Amino acid sequence: MPAVGSELEHAWGVSAERAAHIQTELARHVVLSALGAEQVRIAAGVDVGYSLDGSRAWACAVSMDSSYRVLERTVVPGAPDRTYSPGLLAFREGRLTVAALTALEARPDLVFCDGHGIVHERGLGLASHIGVLLDIPTIGVTKTPFHSVERLPETERGSLLVYEKEWGARGAALRLRTGVKPVYVSPGHLVDLESAIAQCLGWSTGHHKVPEPLQAADTLSRLARQGT
Image (tube, rainbow, N blue to C red; front, side, top):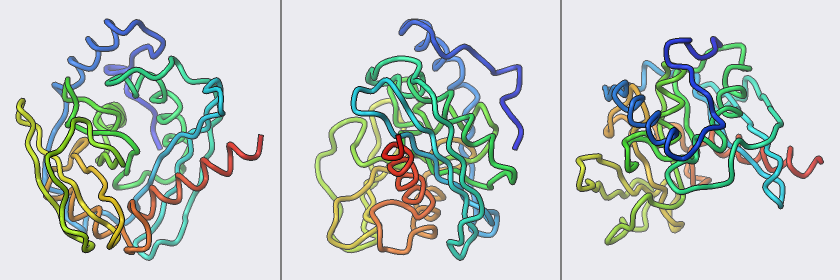
């Protein structure tokens, strides 16, 4: 899979002010468009696990075909580029995330990220950031909302509530497994909200809280962390 194009490439270990400026500039490149089920033959999930003290990280990517057969796994160890700061997750783990995805030999048609997409104060959460840099469709799927939500969807799988933030970004609280807490879905890049919801449901068996590629990446990151 190709690496970041030089036109949009940037440094990761920067100040908070510089990071915010980069986000604002990259947000202008985000494109929201329909992505049909027939366009996605391979989907990947990417997640980052951390050591207890936060000094080490393992970025893991797992790609699957539509029958949920694992095609590739990659693990990239390293150090995060900064401590956690709200709104700046990409500048903590983005470099390692990009490395894990570009280590895949076959380019996925879609990437599920454990981070927000356009539902972000500058319109560029981790999923949008990675999507723009790699020019690949991405969807943000998180277990906590970027901002508080007033209510939750019904308890059945497939139940959802669409919400719109004051700056116009739309996301959804979506249950992918009956009886468990919903996930918060937002378009990253080259995907609109309706497609993001459909892709999350299409790549979910109903056995896990998140889509299967993301669940596999989460499991791999836990194993990588425990192996140290």
